[in-house]
Image (cartoon, rainbow, N blue to C red; front, side, top):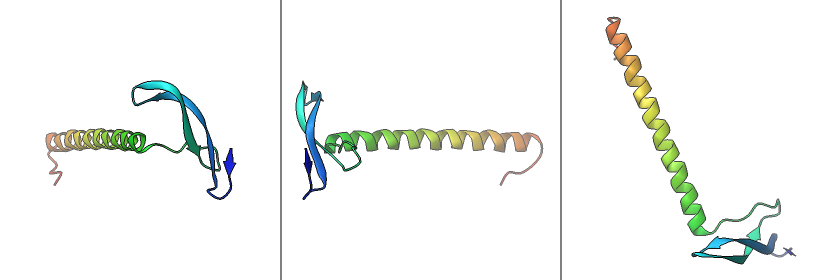
Length: 78
């Protein structure tokens, strides 16, 4: 159901929440994107942070390998 004053849709979403699988009232934006609950947003941010940390670790390891290779070749990487 479109609510023009809020510019949001209110509808029924079936899924698990609070340990219960059932139908829940949920909000969607005008493009049809489900608006996340705060716990879902926190989980999503945590996943993004973990991915970014992994990417940074990989990049650091790559830089260390390249620096070691340069040292083997007699080049000071610093």
